[in-house]
Image: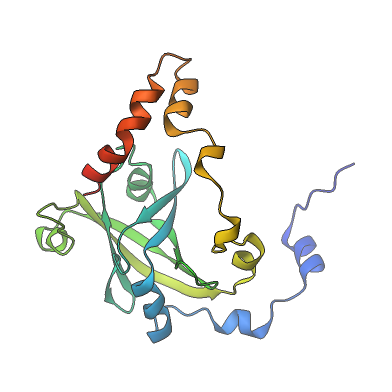
Length: 204
C-alpha cells in the first residue's frame, strides 16, 4: 500500500483551487512594485536544470546588484566562486531558470521565472565592474513570469529573527567539513584561520 500522490487530480482534491489573489499577482514583467524588490535585494537563489540534473545556487552582492535592463530583462554578474559553474553549464544546455529574491528583514519574497543566456559582451561586463575587476560572464534573464510570495515561510522559519540566529561555532567549520570529506588528510586549522582574509580578497 502506498500513500504517494501520483497525479495532479489527487493534488487538486487535497488543496482545492488557488485563491484569486494568488493568480492575479503573477505577471509576465516587472511592474514598479516588483522592480522595487529587485533593487532592494542583496541575495538571490538561482535555480537551473541541465543534463546533469538540477542546481540551486546562491548569488549575493550589494543590494540591487542584479540590473533591470527593461521590464522583462535582468542581468546578473557571475562573481568569483568555486569554478564548478554548475548553473552556467545548465543554462547552456537548458535556458529555463528561476530566481528567488530575498531581502533582509522583509517577509515577502519575489520569484522570477524565465529563460537565460550567458554573455561576455564587453559593455555588459563593464556594467558590473568593481574595483577594476569584471565578472567573467553575465547571465541575461528574459522574464516569463514574476510573482511574490506572502511572508508565511519567513515568519514560520524566524529567518530574520536575531534571537533565533544559530551560533556559527555550533556547526562544523568549512575546514572541518573539508577534512572529513578528504578522509582526514586536509589541514582544517590552517584553512579556517586563513578563510576570512581569503574570502575578502576573492570577492570580486
